[in-house]
Amino acid sequence: LGDIYEFLAKKKTESIAHFERSKADNAAKKNKESSSNKESYEARKERDKRKRKLSNVISKCQSEIDSTEKKIKEMDVVIAGLDYTEQNKSTKILEEYGVLKNSIGELMGRWEEAEMELDLITASEPN
Image (cartoon, rainbow, N blue to C red; front, side, top):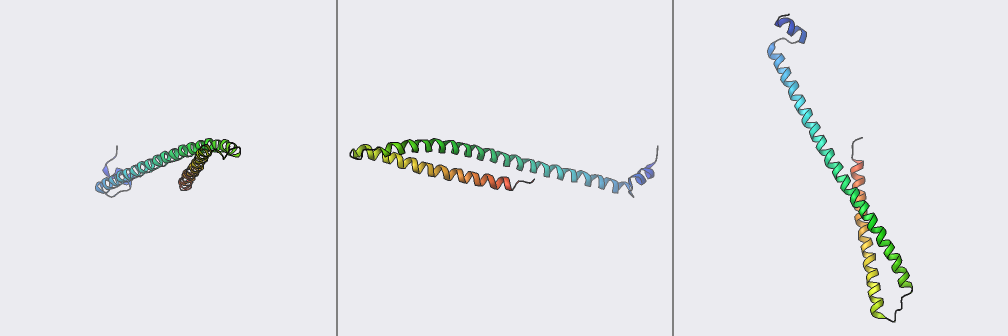
């Protein structure tokens, strides 16, 4: 067994106080790193959550757009054969067609916004 001077020489310190200070500094650095890692983890977790939400919005919008486009195609066929002498019937069909057209415009807007936001999040991710 060695004495205190051998221990200090081994640790390359001049005094026990210096050794204790360096020990406390190392503990503080570890706490900072741990806190930084925790913040990084929380930020990554939040970013991944947002990406999942946006992906869900995108897929939902895409499916709604597909079904609305199918309805519009069906309406195109109906409108092509529409008898405009029956004003009530033709007006109702044309109003429904207009609603579908507006709806698809709104869906496309939501889809585009979600795509752009997802692209921004993906581009800002650290590699």
